[in-house]
Length: 133
Length: 133
Ligand code: HEM
Image (cartoon, rainbow over all chains, first blue to last red):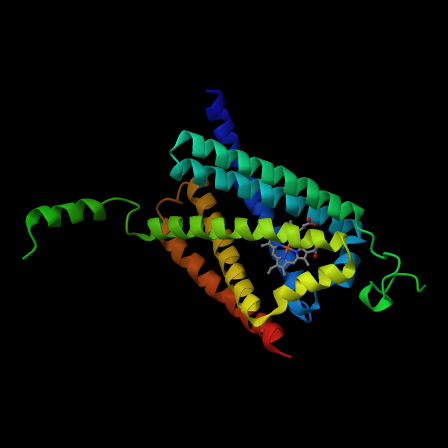
């Protein structure tokens, strides 16, 4: 009974987060691939410029958490569908959980602790708002 | 001459909702694209994390994404994402509407059509970025 309720919660989460992720990922791809220069325009200055803005900090946090949890729940179902040997299944599910938690913590730390103007870096690598030294 | 047993088996298979039909292909594609996107996301959070190390390191890592081969890989990734997103919406409509099951086949072709339209908007611009200079 309890697992069934949990399974139902996961089922609803996949649908809700899926709809939100469409908006987040299409925006992410438009900003990062469709702007002038596309993928070639992505460098430290571009990313530091974005992440200096609280809007993009929270946008990326939502993207990070939702995409990883949505993807992890999907992979859990795939593993449970194909891996029937109990030990191997347990190992893979544990690896999946550990990597997800690790990436969520790492990614969140990156978003909120990035220094956009690190000392000792040539100005042409930095966002234009960094004070000239 | 086809023997009757084989013909009957085929009839039975043709009578199911999933096997060999739009319902099956949409499911297979949804699963394959989902798994591919998940593994990209694992790598992607790590490559983004190098932005926290040092501007020059991040720029070098991003350089790997700017080669022609990776440019084609990004096109494939976006193709997978657009399909997964649109087909995910189709799954939600099948689950939550009264008419969804009846029109699931039609909606699969709508998904393919919208996929073509969105790719036509994305691909030329992306390839121009990747292959121009
Ligand atoms: C080729 C396509 C993609 C490119 C060029 C790209 C580029 C980038 C860049 C430059 C960043 C740094 C921060 C920012 O710009 O907001 C970033 C962060 C991020 N991207 Fe993407 N991205 C792509 C596809 C995706 C996809 C498909 C997903 C989700 C499934 C995704 C999820 C994320 C997440 C969660 C972050 C934040 C990671 C962190 O700060 O730890 N990206 N991406």
